[in-house]
Amino acid sequence: MKVLIILQWIFLLYMLGLSLSYLLLNLISIVTITRYMRSHRLSDFLESFSDYELPISILVPAYNEESTVESTVRSLLQLSYSEFEVIVINDGSRDRTLSILQESFGLVKVPEAYQQRLPVKTIRGFYRSSYYPNLRVIDKENGGKSDALNSAINTCRYPLFCSVDADSILQRDSLKRVVQPFLENPLTVAVGGTIRIVNGSTVQGGFLTKAGLPGKMLVRFQIIEYLRAFLFGRLGWSPLNAILIISGAFGLFRREQVIEAGGYSTDTVGEDMELVVRLHRMLRLKGQPYRITFVPDPICWTEAPEDLSSLRRQRSRWQKGLAEALSKNIRLLFHPRSGTVGWLAFPFMIIFEWFGPVVEVVGYLFVLFGFLTGLVSPLVFVIFFTLALGFGVLISVVALLLEIISYRIYSEPRHILALFLAGILENFAYRQLISLWRLEGLVKWIKGGKLQWGEMVRKADWQK
Image (cartoon, rainbow, N blue to C red):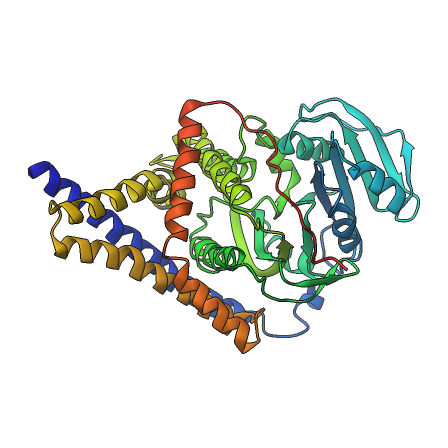
């Protein structure tokens, strides 16, 4: 009986700690976004930096992206920014990715001289567009997303580089917004923007013209997840300089610091998070002041999985990548120089994200089975599921409220109502299923082995 009582307390305290931690992040996010909206209220704010913009290299790794790569590249070429280049890396695609780029942008094969500061797979050729002087394409042997990005880092011309997925669409002013922290604080080494789901929206000429909701509830659940992750997850850690994740779909980095850190790791499937954690570790342990931050208004639109099998592979891969990123940089944990990253963010990620799926899945099964067999009291059952489900609903609804009071991407009342409904329903079965898939990813990490580029079924029916 003592063992059962101890287990009950472990699961209850875990859910309580998780709920209170998320609640605290929520409060920090509300204060942060209020201050951010107030300080960025003037319409000419972005123009005040127009003479001081730093040139940016946009890196687009592409593997079997024939359905979306043209639209993505066209949108990037039309961005509102003074000086930038676009480098698409065809990482040994087996489909028509390279052919489409050649046909659409008039690619011409050219010689290229560069310094290989990061080791990469063999490059088969360099191409330049005869239509757009700032568009280049690297054709290389397949080496994975990290290797593709490293090959572009070797050849890019500018001090900042922005990584963008080949199935993504940036808003026209995204670069102007995401570069602001570099202009405001020279210690900035990395900045992340917001990722939104494009499913159900309308894209014309490479730009999103109307934000809409997808018909499938599965994708609406993911919209709520993304709102939670970016509008209070990233936003909550940013003031503490303790962000451990910048999405690989949209992040801006200082090139020299990334090269000094060794570039993207090729032995992990979570190369985006691992790089950010490694940058923290390198700079913290050196005692070098820096900033890694998040800005909520630069938006990158990306396609989300619409079927369970693709979503399962994605979440399993994300969890494996998270475990790899944390385990490879475990020296950061409680290091005397690690600051808020090593003493707050890292323990949080270990307890609630790295091993969280184990506690959550086992906790649900234990409390439910124990209640049905009489081993767990009705009081413990009610408290556990109130914390697990009640706080889940609260966090989802608050994240949606943050969206409504800030950027109102989904402004139509019927869309807001539909998302409120999704924010409630996703706590019943969907979140538990995600926890199960994350547990699967954790098991794959324990077993070892490397996963390659994750292929997702792209419908791309939002393109016009």
